[in-house]
Image 1: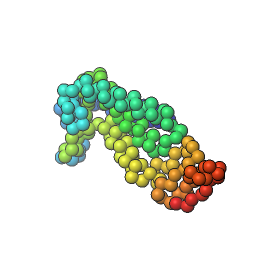
Image 2 (image 1 turned 60 degrees about the vertical axis):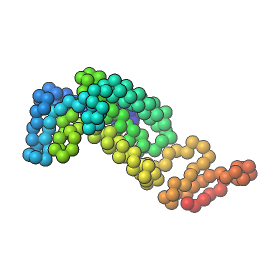
Image 3 (image 1 turned 135 degrees about the horizontal axis):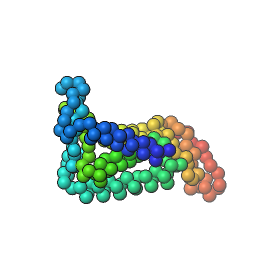
Image 4 (image 1 turned 90 degrees about the vertical axis):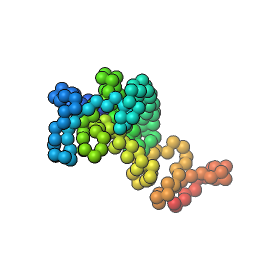
Length: 183
């Protein structure tokens, strides 16, 4: 399922960028809300906020390796990691793939969402930011948002949010018993 989320994010990003590339000229700007929000077609040859401009190899190889690693992680951990963590990683991958496709095909990323007070960005960037935001929330509030992963051994640890925890301490493991703790 999470691989499909990544694929859908990349697909949506590419469809919208196709519409921009085929219907606008580079540097053309269409005001949607005058002075506040425009659709402005730019080609970003750098990374986020145009940093590392001209470093095409690094901006292609590193994201490709990271995306592959995250996809492998999602596949291997799909039954043990919290669902929100996997969703966050899928969004990050989908956005990364969307921008990677642009870099490989055109040598630059198509950006078009222009709020006039912020660098111009695209759908892939939104997916990456949403994924990072969700991931941050699962780190800050692990028991409330991420859910608890399925236990992979005989220990269920308390996460500090009032869940009961079952664990074996050294002595009870020797005696073969499990004690209940109320967190």
